[in-house]
Amino acid sequence: RVGTVDKAQGAEAPVVLVSYTSSSAADIPRNFEFLYDKNRLNVAVSRAQALAVVVASPALLSVECKTIEQVKLANMLCRFAECAEEVKLPDN
Image 1 (cartoon, rainbow, N blue to C red):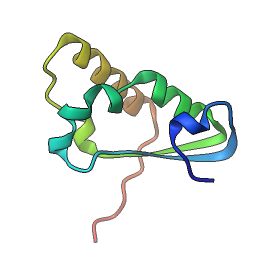
Image 2 (image 1 turned 135 degrees about the vertical axis):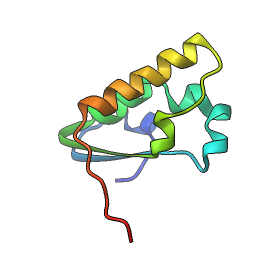
Image 3 (image 1 turned 90 degrees about the vertical axis):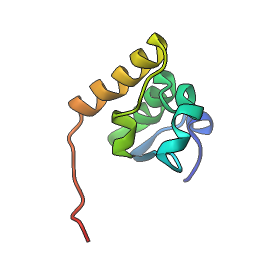
C-alpha cells in the first residue's frame, strides 16, 4: 500500500517506508512546520510492526532555523536521526 501519513493513521504494516524529503533545499523553509512535525513523524514510524525505513535528505538536518520553535522541531528530527541506524548508499 502507498499512502500519506494522514491516511496511514490507525493502519499497520510489517515494514513501513517513509520518504522524508523536500523537492529542494530551497523548499524546506516554506514547509518547515509540515516537514518537521513531530506527530507526523511519530505516526509514520509507529505504523511499522517490525521495521520502519526512513529515507531522508541530509539537508533536513542542517536547515537554517528562523525561530525558537523551528529550532525545537529541527532538534527533534536530529535526535531521531542520531538514534536511528544510518545506512549510506554507495556513490554511483
